[in-house]
Length: 328
Image (tube, rainbow, N blue to C red; front, side, top):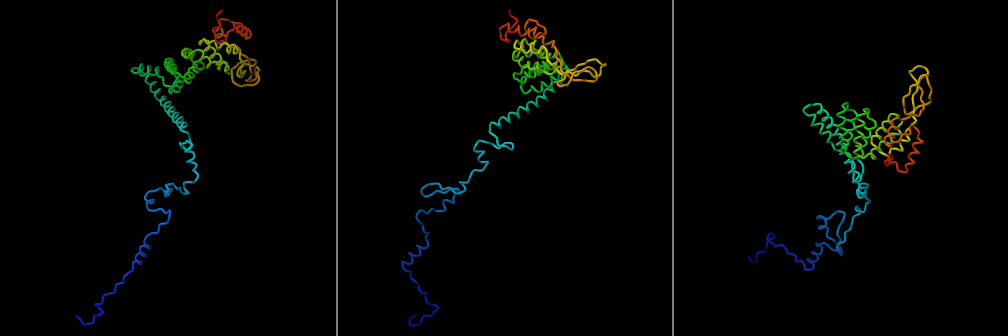
């Protein structure tokens, strides 16, 4: 309606027009400012390691944490050590320990197995099968159980089974068990049987293991060793047998007998020698009969207790003592 003044209620607000310069200035302020060499943080946050970031040129920049000195554990690991049973060990050491553990378990297992076999020997229906199983044992892990069973077994026939099994097992431990039986078992027949089995291992090898017993403090053991050497027929034992013709031992004299009487027992240590007035200790030289018999068996000669004559005879042979000195 023309001529009617407009009410303030119907007045249109004024529109400000921004200049083009103001728009450009607004956009410039809103956008982030990128300086030369700057790197966006967002891609790095997506999965990059917190200890390294990639520079625009592609170089890896390490953080100070990566430059720290290695811990003691890291140093040992870098040198090839492994933490095992509370200690740092090499792989080779661990292998040896585990192998020894397996061997110990096998040895303990044989104790139980041999006890069960021994019980079966007393059962008529199973005796033959059990005896065959014992004789055919060839496991080196069974040696300690066999040696212990041989030492305590009261039945000679069963001792023979154990000796046969030991002779089947090749190795130093089994041979040592046979040597011990050949020299130290209380039963003479068992000692002879052990010597016969030692022959199958080689007389010279077995003799070299028995010879040290000739130097025993126990005179009875010296003679048992000599008997075994004579049965083996090992010429290499001649020289040590000559040296053992007479040996010196400590004896206990007196004690319990009438005054002036002498009784002697062999012992590894002692004091003075006297007669009567209580037991006394002293040294005495003893002629070893089994040593002489072994020398006669091995050489075919007999110079009795004359050590010098035996040595002269040996020198006259002009041959190594491991040859057959009975020839010529």
